[in-house]
Image 1 (cartoon, rainbow, N blue to C red):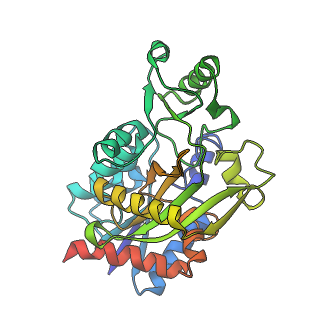
Image 2 (cartoon, rainbow, N blue to C red):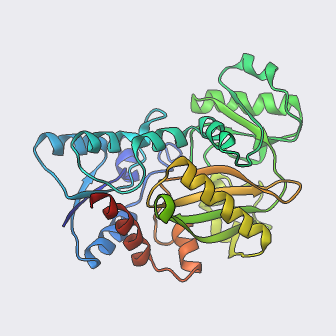
Length: 324
């Protein structure tokens, strides 16, 4: 079986002049090498394709694959993660992970929270600030947390993201509007434990892999799971698998959210407990990072005794069920 691999390689964009932060979500060569090795070890023939424009050229040249392992994040727009699945749908080529509808929805944290709230899943009260005038209409109790509405990897999250006054909120939101050219999501700050839940599978067959608690060390200067903290996670964060009653509830909430949103194959859901200890949905990662050493999902799997090859096998097994 011939498996194409689509991805956004960080080095390629850096060479085009994009910044370190612009390319933070993109993959390093060793991630692609690790995925390719795992696929070959499983007996698949592999073919590196690249990003959406590379895919478009290959499709127009007549190339086809039995399935595409897609981890491309895309570069522009709220639907950037959906671009490759859209093309593959048009050519009736199956692929790993979620479809365009889910990838476009979940990149926008505000729209996702509307759906999550409608599903009855706990999530902090929130507002989306699209322009300066929107700030006057926010009527949420402080403290609040402000971040870009459509970024991952902790981009735009700093010590200044937790705001305790209207002036701090206004400053944080205006910085996001100007720096990222996109709206800011403002939501109630949750003071409790922080979890990330690994999930594999699709629909009723999806299941929690494990619940991992994210704990900040004394070196986590900003006290948030920010871009800087994630870059320096070895000294700023410690991870542990947890299975107490709050952690089990986090797993239950995450699984309901995963199934309710319609995510597929594997990914992560991040949650944080409120003042009453109730885990709240924060965001979903339907295209979770797959670096074999540094990414949260492989780290979680490793703690749970699941090797990298087994993780990739699970993703493929789930995706291949859609071919039958």
